[in-house]
Image 1 (cartoon, helix red, strand yellow):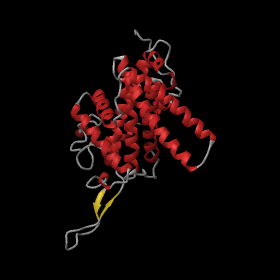
Image 2 (cartoon, rainbow, N blue to C red):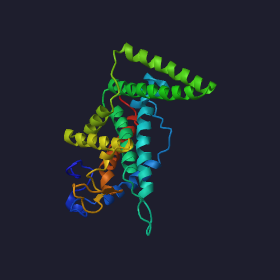
Image 3 (tube, one colour):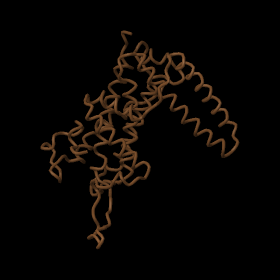
Image 4 (cartoon, rainbow, N blue to C red):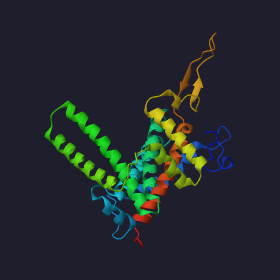
Length: 285
């Protein structure tokens, strides 16, 4: 990304000068830790108060209600941001543990969790919230069955068979509800991230940056080198040879993950607010 301050996830560059004259990525990441502490104080399970929007939404599909889809996404985001913190929030003389790939992967998962929560919670229309939650649960059921089928191929196990049968039953029930409403939408991670980012930041260009961060994190999660090539933390190790080739070394750096971390943080913050407003206040229906 050409400008790390453009996504609204960092203060202006002049307020926090870094080594390159830009923002101090480490300071910005550390500024979120008090909010992470507050989020950890909220213990699950998250049960919407009777009469709230989410309590009413949950009546559509009690086996996995709208509130639980959103709560799961927020929890995934908070946990992964906290995992990054565990590596870097150390006391001197210890130094932060920075990883070229792992922190991008953790931030990516935090981003996916946060955006799924906001994507489900942000619409004012109840039918849209319900349809989006159904979409995510349908995708989750499919992925769960793939895992269970893999277990069944490994060995016979009565418990696994029972779980698989139950998931298949719930899958059929939900498919029937969606079919009755003419809902055939497929789950699309890119769409979820883009639309949740627009809802959070109110800017389509920032949403494009957030999607780009997710793609970079996906590269790291799949062990693909484009996630680090040409980015901060990469240095040339010695002069080029006669053919112009040189060896490069890539190491951990706050600049590698700060943008995706902050995008996930701000979207998770939005999810936290929406959980409270839709789940802890009585709805006017």
